[in-house]
Amino acid sequence: MNTTAHPLRSLRYLWGLLTEPSNTIQSVDQRRQARLLTALLITLFGALLAITFLPFVSSAGTTQAPLSSEALAAIGLLLGLYLLSRTRYTQLVVGIFIAGIDFLLFSTFFSVPIVDAPLYYLVVPVFMSGIFLSVGATFLLCFVNIGIMAFAPTLIPQAAGGAANPAYYLGTVTAAILVFIQFRNVLEKDRRFEITQALKKVEVLNQELTKTNQELVESIRVKDEFLALMSHELRTPLNAILGFTGIMIMDSERNEQNRQMLERVEANGKRLLTIINDILDISKIEAGHLELVPESVFLRDVLERLQKQMGILAEQKGLKLSISVENTLSEIYMDQDALFKILTNLVANGIKFTEAGEVSLKIREQNQTMIIEVSDTGIGIPAHKQSIIFERFQQVDSSTTRQFGGTGLGLSIVRHLCQAMNGTVSVTSNIGKGSTFTVSLPLDTPVVHKITVDEKVSEKTGV
Amino acid sequence: MAALPPDLLAGWKILVVDDEIDSLMVAQNLLTRCGAQVLTASNGTEGFELAKQHLPRFIITDLSMPIMNGWQLIDALKQNLSTAEIPTIALSAHAMSGDREKAMGAGFTNYLSKPLVPYSFVRDVLHLLVDTPKVADVLKQVEG
Image (cartoon, rainbow over all chains, first blue to last red):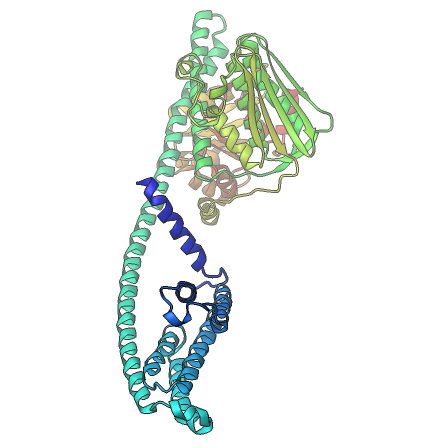
């Protein structure tokens, strides 16, 4: 099928290319007219070439001299008109074309004694005018034609021999115009009917869309409420669990076993809290509710906080955590929470997947960009997994989900945050040797501040 | 983190309002450890009465509560001359974006989200109240 379809398809393509209207014509109707006109001109051109060059079409007498000067002129004219019809001057082409046919017919008309035959050809320009120009132009053309027929013989003596009877022409043209008007009316009626039908369909579709939209808004609201409620419901018992265990750990220093178990309860409570926070973050980000508030940030403060939080984790696993920053970077302008989330996620990840050695965080500046490198000496990430780890809920492999905890949301959050700050995050890794995550954040980030509809409403209602 | 001195808040009256008995106990325990006298209430109405009666140094209140919630409580406190100036912290399990702004807008001095961190709770609270008299002195004592 395909092999036979190919030449046909390329022919269609060629035809489409040859009749393609100018890009400057916008309206669908005008494009259709322009296409029709070029098609007509190409057909006529082809016919003219055939008559001129193919001996079997020509009459026996003219075979020895096929290329008459008139034929050449006609070919030239058609070619010119075709080229002009590819521009936006479609109407001008139609005008020239009609004038040309009229002139040709009348010149035959007045020079050859056969009277009535060309008369019928004179209907052609009238039709052309009806299709391409206006009703007014069509009537004008009829009057001009009748006028020439009535008065030319008296003004041009040599034309008198071939003069036609204007009354015949009038009758023919009137009949043609009546048929044409009727045809046009029928077409117009069909068209109006189609338009009304289409409008009705659009109306129905519109209503459906409005309904769907309302349902969607409602379901998003329900989802948001559910999320807020779930977060609240989970935090309340966690408050008790973490609170009581904290207090008991403070008190029961002497009972080592109890203290250890309480520490486990506490660690698990904290883990649950991290999961809740990650899910809240990712759902906020995906709902487009991420709000970045760039502010003056003293990098040292952020890194001190990071050292405090992550140092304990690294210490527990016997890892070295080294943090270094270039001196040129002291005060920067960006969203502090987002920056801190990026750093903690990457460093915590490094610690999580490293058994021995060190996790290092290096921050430097390069061409108005802050480059953050977090390297570990951990298990590494296979090349084919390096792209999926930034997708949500993805870890390097499902068996590691058992070995290493976590929702698999951390890196997805990092990527989203980096994108929101016009930055990037990437990874290089060697299996068994470790991984390096590189984040680059532009330091001249324009202020990205989104206020969501919800917050605007809550600001207004105030409380 | 070093333990706080047991007489850090000696002589301070602090009101804690929460309908969750567990949350109440945790906060009460942690504050009592620093020598504070902790008054507790399980809804806004009780809390408002205690506040008028004892004029505590500061108030920590939950937001979602039966009978009178935290939003209504802050309104009542602000409209009563004797209690209008008492610093009040919202301690809530609401942690969606905008909750903090909403609370500050409603007249709370500051906002802390649950679960609270036992080891640093008192310190966190003092940090949030840093603009109120005496707190700065106490903080200096804690942080050296």
